[in-house]
Image 1 (cartoon, rainbow, N blue to C red):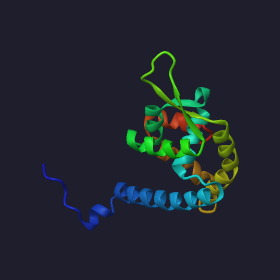
Image 2: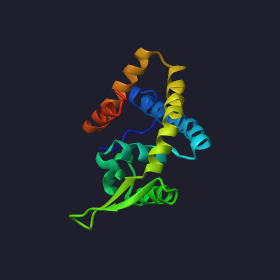
Image 3: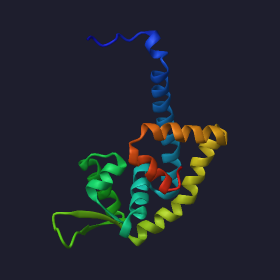
Length: 164
């Protein structure tokens, strides 16, 4: 079966329209939030998400491969990210006592302090961005709709982190 040719009709399909809007909204929101986070705290969105993931993890550490999955990064992408955080003293490498092949990324005290300092302003920026455009009911509906697109565990993780 041949793929359907792209037509104006195809672009008007609700799924295609939703996908396009999601991509544009994500790009615009990421630019706005990243710029304010970097200016105020010297952190990129990925830096912040990595620090938050480590802060939420048991013992403030995760296997590097698990952190890569949470951040939707490749192994080389998470390595590059962690190199910068390690150089800044926000994250450190830790080994597993029972299996030396396993390497953890562990949040340092300095990383926890930077995350805490950044969190209030970053969450405020997120709320301002969304709440000036959407009502509470629309925000709930949007969150629920996007959670349906996430993997089954992603929605539970989001709720556990106070995002649902």
